Length: 384
Image (cartoon, rainbow, N blue to C red; front, side, top):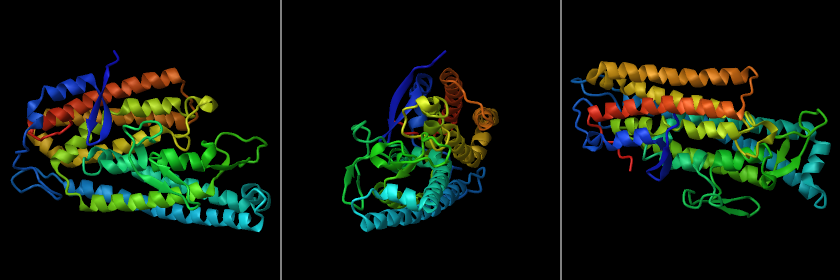
């Protein structure tokens, strides 16, 4: 049976939690009391010798490693965008009356195409490393701001209440107020040509005689401005992770809030080209399947649980074993769908709905178990 989803706000981020989980949290007052477990470390590093080993520092190092790899990709992406911008600018200076994109495609097709493809690969690298961190970044209160800015926040034009207030200024002087997130509102539509405003020219990139979805040259000013902005945001996020002193409350809050978000991701997958095909009207989620992103998020959350699981096991070994089993079941479920998709299976929207419901049910049950563990351990989870 489908469960009603409720909107729960956590540190400025709107989460969709099922009614069952919300009710559980409301009925578990011990999950909202002061953290009192003596074996629990209050900052990064391992727990005291008197209790089971809980390595929160490993979670921080995991997040830092992925953030560093992401930043390497965003820096390279900004460099490629600069090269692309310079070529477009030179073409414009050479003949101000001609369309610089048409000129480049006619005279310098191989170089311009190579730069676009390289930029796309770097975008995918950066996004992949971010998804491995997203469960932690989006779920930890002191870091959640960066998820909204980099990957998840809507544009102000679509959702003024939930949009992050920030300004993007392009090299040509154009200014965008609250334009949404870097990955999916700005750069993906620019690199794959799904937003006409961010597109320089639609072209036949694969040479098959047709111009399909995703075949386009980016608008150079948006590409450069957004890639530079993404790199700056990533550097700032790195600094925040470096300064972060993780606690058990952070880890458990991230798990309880981020595990039961399957409905959102599967809904986006359903509306994307990977399910809907050429009928899709989405500007985003064209570069890589949303299932790939879910895999990354679950990997980070699973790693987080593994590093606090000794404390859960010490408190209730059966509860720990059930959490670990349910984690593996959810991960395997998504892995199997993604493997089928990679092998050429295109699921229907109806199947995507069914899979999303099943994944959400698995995730809701798992999150409730983690919330129970937090309650048993008297770990405060502020989900207001």
